[in-house]
Length: 458
Ligand code: NAD
Ligand code: UGA
Image (cartoon, rainbow, N blue to C red; front, top):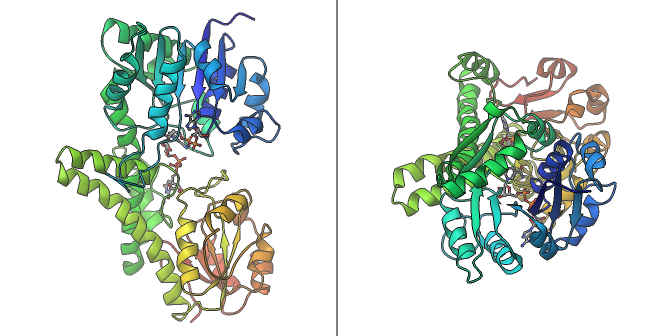
């Protein structure tokens, strides 16, 4: 079959895989190839057991795979054939050298640029899909356009705003799609080629166009604002616990102000996920490199507040369990950084587990989707740590259970049965405020929500 456009995506991860699957599903006239150096990941994309869990993704992939969606490790052939190349490789926080712990590690991104340059035999549009520091495109253009073969590369920015667990819905019905380019005739032509793909299914008014630097900076800013809302409400949750105010009531009441809005005001044990912390620290680093120290400090406090909330959660457990958890079995309900994903990157559960083990608790972790990742995350941890798929078995013999992920499953467990099998007094620490606290208290549990008065029998 003849396709109108040949699109390549380098990087078959949480972003590249679902994004390209939806593009292929919605644009049968576009041939979409996704490449990755990780052969196991590509094999999984070609199997019935996809490498990531996302509701609805199996169906989308099944419809398009083999028709106009292809997964392969042949990066070179993919580059040669492509008109438009999306680059969706990982951009983690640098762990070494200048900027370690803050700056983005751009080695994978730059390597990709050099591969594109080595394999291309005609002009290409290169699209930044990864989240990158503002003005990265400048460096990419220097590398790509510094060639003696007369090849021209137009670099665009098209950041991805999908959230894990709702990736397919976010891609099929996005609040907006952002495409940034140079505002030159060539840049605008390249921009149109990418805009045309999205407007196949996204309403035109939801496709925002901007200059390159605005687009790059928007992505970091969006994540910083989202995370800032969580840290803000978490800071208020601590105050609620001291004053008998109820954080859910406060969040609801402020959220009805249309200027504030109701979303992303759910107090929790702390935000996790692969991007919020990394992107804010990257913003902090960028601000510092421009000498904007107050700006850097302001955003860094969002990460500090999140770390404090995780520590505060465990301190609260300790304080209420008579200042010792040594030798006590504690069941952690949920390890994923949020519900509906198996992803555990930067999950608050990692820090909670580490702290509890340091206090010699016997920790048992349960999660419906994330136990394999949990095992990997905790591989080097010392102490009494076990993994148990069945939440009832996890809670059996425990002194306390702590809800760390808001899986729907945990709302509907038979807590009477759980209480019967627990040591007494039995404690529940609800790090997501998803349980019916009054009913649990009346059953006999001592209940410690986030940002609300505890309900205890002593
Ligand atoms: P990921 O680690 O899941 O996937 C990246 C993939 O790129 C890996 O499979 C890796 O093997 C591959 N890769 C690296 N170098 C390569 C190369 N030279 N050639 C071919 N493949 C290569 O990462 P992700 O979560 O998909 O994130 C990718 C980018 O998107 C990051 O910049 C991230 O900040 C951003 N982002 C992520 C999310 C999310 O929900 N995870 C959402 C929006 C934006
Ligand atoms: C987030 C953004 O929502 C996406 O727009 C963005 O594309 C993505 O980061 C990225 O760049 O990687 P994601 O991390 O997948 O998406 O998930 P979120 O729904 O944002 O949740 C992040 C964390 O915040 C989770 O741990 C979640 O439980 C927590 N959270 C979220 C709260 O504690 N309270 C809330 O009110 C909302």
